[in-house]
Image (cartoon, rainbow, N blue to C red; front, side):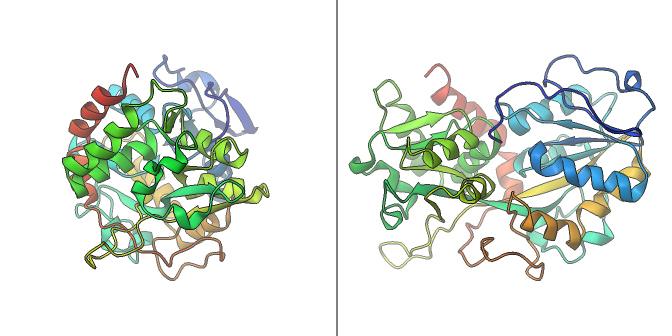
Length: 360
């Protein structure tokens, strides 16, 4: 999350297990060259600091050897998805554990995923399950504003448009909306709110990046957004609840604002805060389908979702009955999003956003 954008090197966790992390879009090392052949290959976009321990525990409980390819912070899910598409004719990966949803929907639309109705997912709400069982959502994050209370009053930053108030010029930020959950955030806005409102928001940010300082800083990643606010270099920035929780645990004077919780000017329903679940899916043609199903069942268990809620990532369970600590909130209005439609329109929105943000 806040690690520098560099390749993760091969690690030996135990004599019979290895975790493989390489620079994406570079030639992938032969898995066979790393020793005994794995029983399962997982590509994981959830930050390694959060997911590695879980994968290692699955190895211990199952006795299976797992190879895991992790993302790079500056490439995020887009890099892993590109790797999967490049390997589509000869899949290396069995299971894709994504830390968001629209890129998973994209893979489903490319007919790259295999159906699996996991018995562990029966109590997960239909909103977070593909109707054809191609993917399942769990353990979500919310798109929030992290606010440094020594620099700003959180009550002044309640609506997504509040970052444009002149009093915050040069003091707020957001990651460039071309990768990761910031891309999901932007794509969800275009699909849900339409191009007029969304263009007004994202073009307004991009148009002033030549200024010093720009009214809204465009930064490298959500992790950097969090760091700048935590360290007092910005008053507030968009990020995810997992990044916020890291800052909270450090003792920094920060709070999370869940935006768009108030009714509209004419009494309209609040827009709500965007919720982005993790997703898990089995690749079509997976080399180890039985092990893949076993891993999916394990990840989708209530036990795993509870662990993610209590972990430093503070993931929000999508099941109402899963225990969670008090700081993992569920008492907020959630933005109503058709994830399948967002995924279907993702390529169009991505190209549009590239035209706005590249070379700026």
